[in-house]
Amino acid sequence: MHQQRKHVLFLLFLSFLLYFVGNGGLPISDPVEGNYTETAKEMLASGDYLSPRIFGNYWYDKPILFYLELIASFQLFGITDFAARFAPAVGSTLGILLTYAFGRHLYGERAGWIAALLTATSVEFWYIGHAVITDMTLFLTISLTLIAFYLGYQERKPRWYLLAFFSAGVATLDKGPLGLCLPGLIILVFLISERRLTALLNRYILLGFVIYAATISLWYLPMYQLHGADFLDTFFGVHNALRATVPEHPRNSVWYFYLLVFFLGCLPWSLAGLPAAVSRIRRRAIAFPKDTATRFLLIWAITVFVVFECFASKYVTYTMPYLMPLALLAARYFLQHEWRTLRIAGGMAVFYVVAVFFLAPYFLAQNSARDAGLYLKQNAPADAILMTWGMRYPSTLTYYSDITALRLEPQERIDAARPEEGVISWNDTNVMPFYALENLGELPSGRTLYILTEQKYLDSLQQQIPLSWQNCGSYGSCLLLKASTDAVLSMTKEEDGKP
Image (cartoon, rainbow, N blue to C red):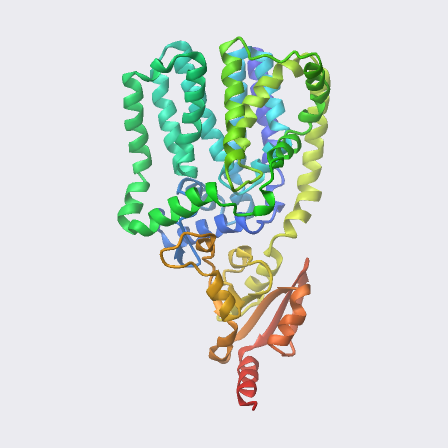
C-alpha cells in the first residue's frame, strides 16, 4: 500500500509538472484549436450550451462534450490560454492514472508504474495532452470502455459491461459514432479470437445498449429535433462518412503515414526498445500471446492501427487510442531495465519542461494570430472592420480580438469555396464569413478597416486595393495593415469612373 501511494503521488506530481505548468504561455493555434476555442467562446456568450456555433453559424464538426469541457474551464478561469488547455491536462492526468491502475491489475504494481511512465513521457501523449482538441477525452473514454469490458469478461462480473456502454456513450458525445464502433470492433475481434462470441448473449449487454442509447440521446436527439436533416447531413455525412472515404489532406494519404506516427509519437520508447524488437524478429521469437490479457492488449493496439490505416483522411492524432495497450505491452520489457527507463523518463521530463517554456510558444505563435488579435482588442475602435487576405483563414484572429474577421476574396473564389446545396463535400467546413472583393464599394463610411495578410501576399493586396496602408505591426510572417473605409470608397469610385 505504501508503494502504491508513493507511485500515485509521484504520477500526480509528474502530470502537474508536464501537463499543467506553462500552459498559460502557449497561444491557441490555427486552424483546429482556434475553431474549438472560438466555438466554445460563442456558445458561452450566447448561453446556448446545446448547439455548437462559430462566426454566428451552427457548426456540426464535433459533438458537444469537448465544447462543454472548454466552457466549464472558461467559467472557472476566464477565457485564457491556460483555461483552454486545462481540460486536456486533466484528461492526461486521468489517462496516466488509468494506465497505471489497469497495468497494476494485469501485471502487478511495478509494471503498472512503468507503463504509466512510458505513457506520460511519450511524445504523442505529451503533445495531445496540451492540444485543444477532442482526442485526449476520446483516449480516456475509449480506454475506459475497453478496460470495463475486459474486467467484466475476466472476472465474470457482467455489471462492468454497463460501465463500458456508458463510457462508449460518453465517447460518442465527444467524437461521434467512432466512440462505439472502434471499441466494439476491438471487442468483437477479441471474442472471435477467444471463441467466446456467446459472451455477447447476456442480458447485461442488452441493458448496456439501453444505457448507451440513453446517454447519447442527451444531445443527439434534441439536436435532430432542433436542426433536422441539416444536422444529420453535415455531422454524419461530412464529418464522419466523408472523412472516412475522401481524404481531407491528400498529402497524408500514404501507406507509411501511421508507421511514422508510431515511431515518432512513441519516442523515446520506440527508439529505446528498437534493439530488442529487432533481436526478436531475427530470432523469430514472435508468437501470438498465450495469456488472455496480452492477447487483448495486442488486438486492441493492432485493431486501432488497421482501422485508421483504412481511413481515407489521416491525422497524427487518430491512432492515439493504441498508446495505452502499447505502453502496457512494453512495460514488462522496460521493467527489466528499470533504472535505465527511469533515467530516460527523467531526461524526457526535463526536455518537456524546457520545451513548454522555450520551444512550444514559438512554434505555436507561428500558427496563431494571437498577437495581432490582442493588438486589435486593445487598439481597434469598437466599430472597426477586420479582414484577412490571401493567407489561410485564422480563426484565432476572431478569438483573440473579439472582432469577427472576414475572409476577403474575389467573388469567383468565394463561390467555389462555399458549400453547395445537396452536395456533401469538404466545402461544408468553410463556415468562416466571406467578403467579396467586388463589394468593397459597399463598405460603410467613417470606419477603420484592418487587413491581416502575409508578406508574400502583400503585392497582390496592393494591386487589388492600391492604398497607402498604415503598418500596425508584424506578427511572425503576418502583417496587420490599416486604412479608412473612406479611402477605400474613394478608390472604388475612381476605378468605377475609369473609361
